[in-house]
Length: 513
Image (cartoon, rainbow, N blue to C red; front, side, top):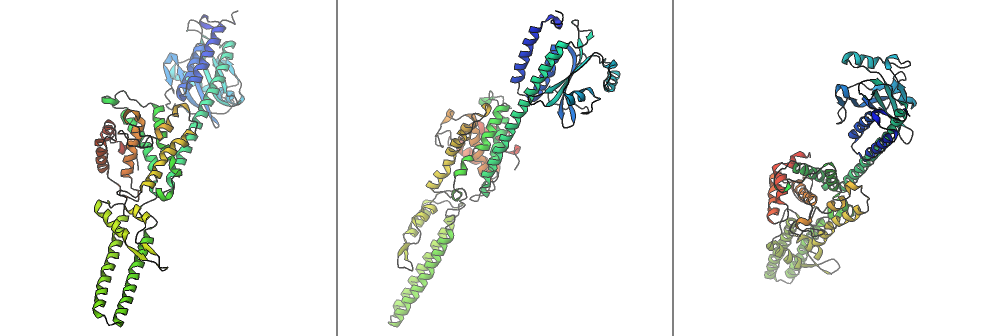
């Protein structure tokens, strides 16, 4: 009956219940360092021992991860800090290494009288500290694949009075072996989950980089938006007054926002490069238009000379001079139209009403090609492109570009995100939504746009303004960009309080390149 009863008067059924509770706790704990600390703490509680050490196997050595000694108030490793003790080489004369190599538990009544292992280390430690290492239970941590991933070493199990050291009872050994096995599986699962998350993050970054790489004009945009969004959220975390006083981005919320930043432009994989790379209004056609005008210019000169020759033959000298003057006017008009087109092709030119009238007039002029077919100086499509008031995209092209947000949402909805990233598709699709309801694709308004969406919208615009890799504009300074953002706030498009945080904490300085 005494074998059934454990220390502190608890029976074996209580031990089983405690072990089950520990198993549940191990499964629930996701933080790697707290998980390691929990293993040692609960093993010590179950065995009522004074000290415990947890090693993890790394290659051909055991590395100290957790050290606890209650009587000396020593608790190291629980916060992830490095334990500055040399790793244990995997040689069998060291008891922990032996357990790691063989997978066998070792239960020693008194290390000072044990044979077969080198305990010079513990004795040296005892001499320095005045501690007395006596009983020791060393258990392998084997996962579900039978791999020994670490070793749990417990020292000095205590009697009920918490004073007298005893040998670790055999039933304790069984319980700790079970705990070590559960712990190893929990650690392996946690590592696998971490590896999967890291793999997913790497895949997302590679995918985002590939999308940016489709065009040289977007090389670092995705990375900068992700980092600016994260830095903005971190700034909100240190705001203790105003509307953001109760907003806090914990690790998971930060990761979700950052991931949304990385994926916000994934829909651009569907956007034609002819639209994405459109650096000028007549992108890819300017040379054709200019060559046409050069042809018209030469055609006019040739036809005029022919007419003048006919008039000379007929002796109509006065009309020759008139024809020459009229031809010069027509040639000047062709040159004027050519200069106008060159000017309007540049995205730096704002097409005001006066310029628009000049373009429409130019489009009304016609010529006859070599086949005798009458054609306009400027085609309807060319006129449409040149008439874009600001930027380079026509209404149709802009709609195609705007569709990337819709495709972002559709593509991300096909991915089964883990629970802590479940809102990534929603946030990633909101970076063009404005508070006044005039954004896209949803036309969301005010509080319908979550804070994450407002952050992504703000930093996306800021980066677009300050980016130096856009062909259709020069990079703005941060002062100029903030001024533009200020105008957008007055128009009711952006969150003023969010902008104030962005500006006050100079978030852009937290992001390199």
